[in-house]
Length: 64
Ligand SMILES: [Zn+2]
Image (cartoon, rainbow, N blue to C red; front, side):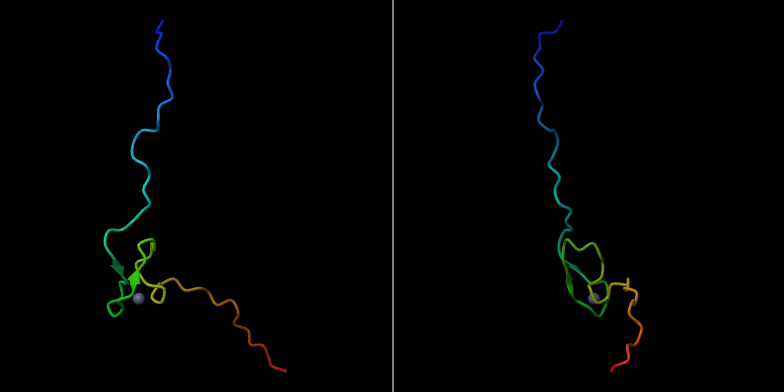
């Protein structure tokens, strides 16, 4: 039998680093030079993001 004592090993490997993109990124729109946040996963700025929110309130409320 082995007399070796079981020791708790520390977690091997590197610590997980936050995802970052090297350098600065700019909106992909040619006419836009908005610098995107390195944490922004999108390739466009807020104004040029292709995804549009659906219009939920399209009903015209008559004024009284
Ligand atoms: Zn843009």
